[in-house]
Image (cartoon, rainbow, N blue to C red; front, side, top):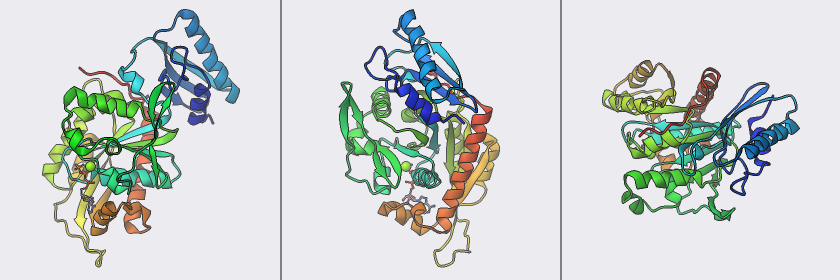
Length: 361
Ligand SMILES: Nc1ncnc2c1ncn2[C@@H]1O[C@H](COP(=O)(O)OP(=O)(O)OP(=O)(O)O)[C@@H](O)[C@H]1O
Ligand SMILES: [Mg+2]
């Protein structure tokens, strides 16, 4: 079996002819896909002459053959982009990028994103978490990382940000870099620029899953993300009532606009019913019923799980020790959501090629 991360390591051994860094760091490799005996990727050859292109192709074959002599390697050479283009922002060292989205605010996206990421890490997957909520980053509090600053250093003359590590996750939040009051003044294209840089300058390790906590709604940030990262899929969070459903549909449709086809891996229904801590078998459907189910029918996807409204989930978030960290009924629900997400991701990868990044103007 060919290991995706080993391929990335092999490609890291090859110097990028134009930037003094390596092929991965130089963002020349995109759409990396590894199957049983084959390796596919796109090599961006912008700015190289024919001789350099030929040499680079040969070097890739050579380095991969060193670790996997039997692998058949398919390299699609293409000239496009240039600095700052969408394909340059791809993260070849990350196998699966999953965005957690919702139409409405306050439905529990961040709580789901954090606990899903942690549950994935606990199942043995190398996992990262990006808090992309520029206006209201909540991940620092939820992971007890408030006031922490990531290390920033120079690498080949460029600033590089080292993600923080917590509970086995690699974590990056805009809240580690910018005060919320500062972020509020950013709008439109400037905001998108900050976000692109924020993703491009962070040195992520090799990861099986990257979970992205999106801000609510369907604004600039979401569009920038959908356009600049090859998202594997999206998880849509909703509450059971129909108002939120209408918004969640809007959020889901954002991933299915023209030229962008990010599959909806599944729906998480949050705050499905209220359960008092002392009466765990009692369910009160205070927000109605059936919203999650309806949404799965609309998107032709699956229900990844239903999470009750319980005081301990909110308290865990406020205390910086997420619910999954404590064994029990609630942790089991999130773990089951993680298992289903992994399954849905595997099915998606089996059926569809890598998501193409396209600039929608
Ligand atoms: N199942 C739950 N039971 C109890 N409290 C919950 C549950 N899910 C989330 N919460 C709480 O509800 C509040 C909002 O959750 P969260 O911040 O995750 O929502 P969000 O959708 O990310 O919000 P925003 O749109 O502002 O980013 C938080 O205080 C959180 O602790
Ligand atoms: Mg949030």
